[in-house]
Length: 315
Image 1 (cartoon, helix red, strand yellow):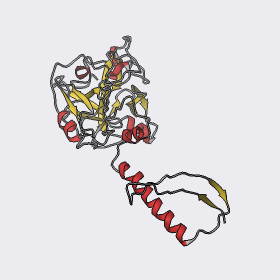
Image 2 (spheres, helix red, strand yellow):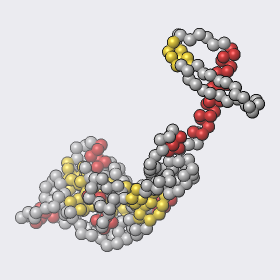
Image 3 (cartoon, one colour):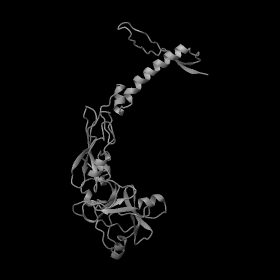
Image 4 (cartoon, rainbow, N blue to C red):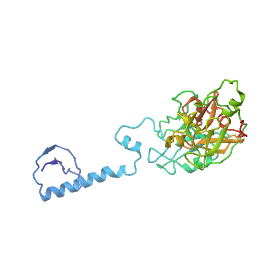
């Protein structure tokens, strides 16, 4: 039987009388055959190891992630988190959010020092609309605050979209924008060139609203000129595709109407990606999120672009 052996040295120093200091020096740790220790050796080792365990564990039981690194002489230059405080004593703001409906902002902090983010404040503030993280605060004394990117056109954009609480049918305000008409092909909803047959065009822009393929509490949009084909998202762009019967298709073709984000008509939210809505952007339809990383997620006119007036079918 092989065991790991360690040799420790403890010594008593001089004055003050009765005070013991312990030098813990790992003189050797080898994989070798070890002699069985005596009762006196076991007792001394147990007392020493108990003392060491108490000294090591006690300060780390309540330590946050950054406390642990700092105790190892490798402190963080910046400490950013949108989920919890990274230092046990930190009770300041974790991040700031901006409300899409009126531009108001509020800071979200932990429930208590060293704790997790106060989700209830965020849920209440963002109810019936969408919110963006505009600033992420530094938890240490360096105050390396992380603001959001000033542009909306790059994948490196640092604003983070937050979905409101996942309930449907809520409301908001500002004017409705122009609807977009899908093209005449059964494969996409890109900008169209008018065909000679106006009736065919009207038919291709008309839809049957049916029970959702993935969730019957929501809806799916079946093409009237190509029955069995539905509006679905793929890569967050909207297409009209034939139902292949897959679970993925059913999810991607299911949409949940709610009161519009600008107060007129309806907004149509993706069932599989609840923070993404039907949006027209540069004459193309997308499943877009407010302030996400793609160009079509731009916050400018977001509420208007995701608001739709539902009317009778053209054909």
